[in-house]
Length: 162
Image 1 (cartoon, helix red, strand yellow):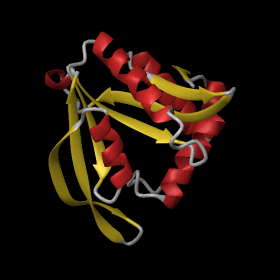
Image 2: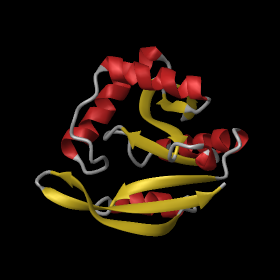
Image 3: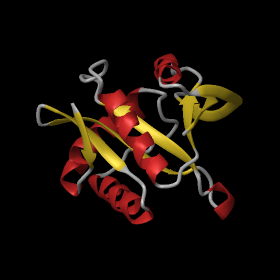
């Protein structure tokens, strides 16, 4: 399993992974599916901003993706990043998440990042456990800030100092 920079040719596979999580899980509170164009634009915007948008590749197949960007707008947040990591449902537990997060953290640190933040659904116990295993600490819970599948969901903020 390796991590590499995402390319526009990866957009269709990334779209499939992302849209599964949009349709079927609370890993994201977004309910609007991504188009291939949307994904291409996100890849290009990340690159232009100097941030990483990476894919994990297992035997030539994209197993997942991760990206990061500035946590909030404004110069005071320039060293604080938020990330997204999504793994294909048939590739979970094979190390793709770890490979991606190692690469994302390294890139963020080398880009002057001081901290990286995970915003995890309060119902996503796997996601919270994954981040705790990587050294993230729970720093806050925002009760009922996301709405999906007909119910309000908590958002857990987890943080790691790089």
